[in-house]
Structures are given as structure tokens and as C-alpha cells.
Length: 74
Image 1 (cartoon, rainbow, N blue to C red):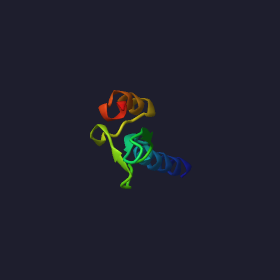
Image 2 (cartoon, one colour):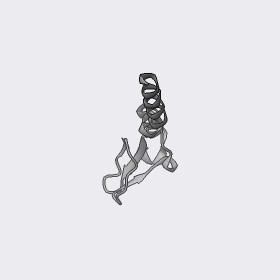
Image 3 (cartoon, helix red, strand yellow):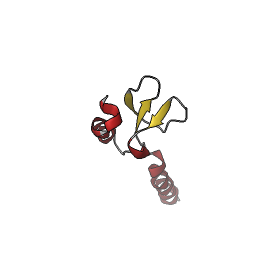
Image 4 (cartoon, rainbow, N blue to C red):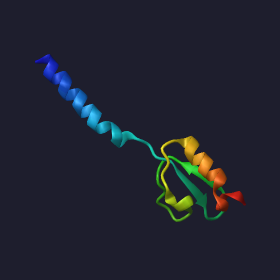
């Protein structure tokens, strides 16, 4: 009985893990023209996605894209 409960818990946790994966976005503030990395997709009008709006798996990948992006080199 205990083994079944444990197995059910492991399956539930394993299937939910990809939903917790964080994605990072390179964004630019439309007023200040400064670029930054955000851990979630922006919804407002004062911040726009840069580099095609591509989500990155790690913050370091997003920072590398930020440095390489032409709108962020101002």
C-alpha cells in the first residue's frame, strides 16, 4: 500500500516539474530605452520584448542575448 502511494506521488511530481521551468526574456523599457532580463513575459506597454521575444532557459543565456542585441547597444 505504501509503495503505491509513493509511486503515485513520484509520478505526480515528475509530470508537474516541466511546468515549474522558468524562462527568461530580454526586454527594453520604451521610455528609458534600457534593456534588462525578466523572469517572466512582460504584459505592459512600457516594456517590449527584444530579440524576437525568444524565451531563454537560463539567466546567463538571456544576458548573453542582451549583450548581442542591437537595440540594447545604445
